[in-house]
Image (tube, rainbow, N blue to C red; front, side, top):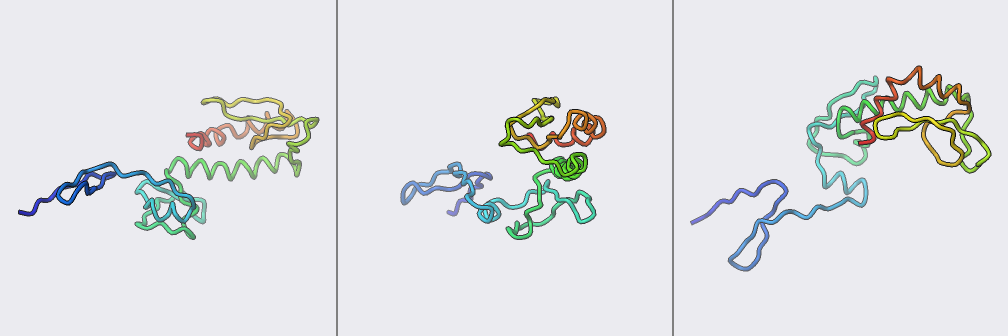
Length: 159
């Protein structure tokens, strides 16, 4: 008599002896390269990407391709956050007019903001790199005031 056993997702059938099998949890394999990730982890239905006209689009494909799917994100919220990040980087560079922080120079003040828990904190930094640093306190505060809503959209990137 043939017996059918349904194996739950995340488990596998392991041969214990010639006549005995066991259902065991699959060992999770962490990828060591992007290509390996693409082979091991198929696309989930809630993945999204940013289209050519900056629209957030659902990613509907069974297979993941290492050369074409580098812009796919695990959720709509993270795709929206990455789009906000792209905008904010352009705006930061515009406000700084070519100025770039020299993180090796402890004598150069950098006026920055960052997230602590759910709040945006500001401060003067010398050598601790952050993404949003400005050449003056006035520019940083104006940036925060003008783009607070866009900055808030970054939060899913910290989850």
